[in-house]
Length: 101
Image (cartoon, rainbow, N blue to C red; front, side, top):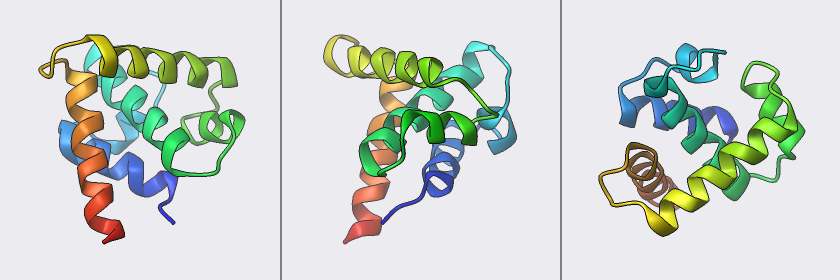
């Protein structure tokens, strides 16, 4: 099974944002999109609770994780493929599929 650390590292690789920025507290859009993507993928590909995912991302509250997942889900349904959060999710998930093969 994939770990949250692996997912966050893939999001960092795909987005070009350092892992410490993805896990950090900054609310700069450039860091938020890959963080939200990583939280979404972690909720989908691990058995971790929202609280556990939030703890990995610098102690964020479960409601922050829930919001990230909701935003990412909406992007996947309604935003163009060029939306940064959607692009990161799709690339991370493609990489995760290769890892599981």
